[in-house]
Length: 164
Image 1 (cartoon, rainbow, N blue to C red):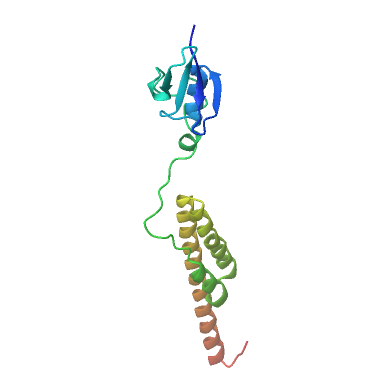
Image 2: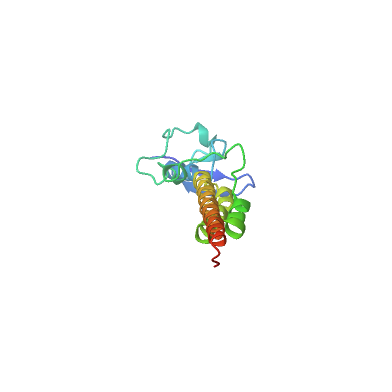
């Protein structure tokens, strides 16, 4: 006959009797630790959970065998420097110089950077930062080209005596 155990909480409350399998489950859930005090039934002998003979890892097929935090989402480390959001550049490229549709795309991407970084999605935040910078540069480039073309056309039209 396998012994059962009563878990003695730090506040003195007693929980159980429980089988070693149940205690292993509690350990995997973080409800007890190696230092948790147990009373073996029916002998009354007091032991810690760490003193029991138990499997080294989670039971095979257990839902705790592969923790979801490491299985589904690889760990990302925070960058050493803040991720630039390029918001000022995006606004200037939209309002003052640039091409309106591309500038709006730059603003949308730059607005996402801080939220993604705050939620720990550093790779996506860096990608949004890169896209915001790219859209801003394109907006400024196209805006400058249009401005130069307009100046050239005005000079040419003004020199021939014809106006717009």
